[in-house]
Image 1: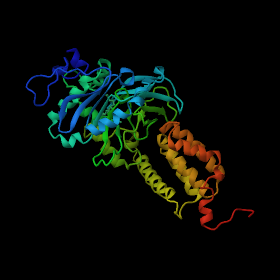
Image 2: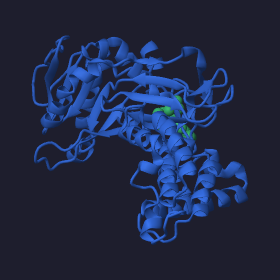
Image 3: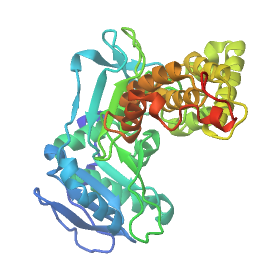
Image 4: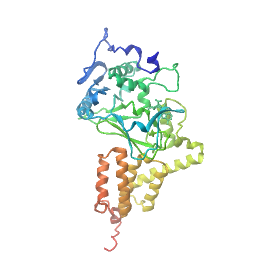
Length: 403
Ligand SMILES: C[S@@+](CC[C@H](N)C(=O)[O-])C[C@H]1O[C@@H](n2cnc3c(N)ncnc32)[C@H](O)[C@@H]1O
């Protein structure tokens, strides 16, 4: 009964007896604890790979193809440096949230820029598995075996996601597939040499699964090149407020965002976020839809070096709309575009201001060593020395005052 309550993996695999597809005898195989190991649990070109030692013995399992496995194996040294933690346990509380299940709320107010978490993945599953292995039973066999191989604590953390909070014992725990669909993260391991197939994988971080979705989130996240997942507060959070990340592209039109929310909830119920319901005020929704359409169209102009429509007031308007729409978790690209475009028009003071803001936002959204942050730092240090200074004015034949 206890195992049901905890939503643990199905009974048959609790004792770690794993059956291979065409074997007549159960194959009792336990992974070694000191290296990568390929199990004999395979289906077509997909196999279960495990590493119990990785990330200070948190462990990592993969359900993937051999060349994808090789890519992860190559970055093992980086994964080894993982630093798995909530940055400050006193800031967050697990809370049951109406219509959404278990989530996180702030125990006290938290400032923008505060790092919240850093976790290594425990499971990677090739996305093509779901097309190439058509029988759900076969996929389940691989996925359950993979989870079963994880170290006990990690498996328990994974299985906590399978609970259905707010529901009582009658309901069965979520399947691993449901968890993967309900969890927003995926990574592309990148094209290998002459590789033609996709390298996209679902990637699971059990602790991070506690962040609920919001299209106007107050927390930004990124997955770094070591596959480490990091979250940072994107706008000031009040005590008691729910912490959220966006599982989807927040610049999508509302209808598409709502459809996505239905998909990951596995339900036809409408999306309950304020950005979808407008707090039941139709005028608010209309305004937000209009703002978003305008943001997207101005963004297209700002990205086009040859645009004849960009003026200082158009950039000012873009900045204002981004703030109004509460898109703080996506400021980095916006401030970078604003900074460059101001500079194209010779507005060096505004360019400097937004370049500095782009650096701050870039740290929140991609980390201090990300390429964008490095580039914006260089730009901010000397906006007039940057190629972009007066770029548009020069092309329009406008001379610098005094020349
Ligand atoms: C990654 S989990 C988040 C933790 C989950 N609430 C739980 O209780 O385990 C994703 C699931 O949470 C629920 N959820 C997250 N954000 C939501 C939202 N904005 N509205 C409704 N449900 C949401 C959905 O059921 C979704 O499938």
